Image (cartoon, rainbow, N blue to C red; front, top):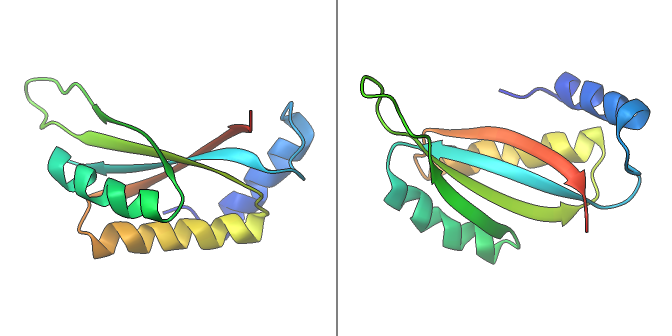
Length: 113
């Protein structure tokens, strides 16, 4: 689980190293995983209604001995601080739990275009 301390470290690192201005809105990608593609398809509409853009649902291309895992990638342009991103992550962990998804797997960030 991503902690608030992780968010503080992320923002400190971005402030020093990211080629974009972290005081402005950025493109945040959020990821969910589940072995059942249809569950991810079902929650996609709920996330879209909350303002997220659906990027896609991808197969992890498992090896023969490992069960398939599907990934849902959504994005949203938002301005965050370490505190607000921590709150967002907690909301998404709860969302995954409420919809019985295997996991909310975290986020990535890039410049809003």
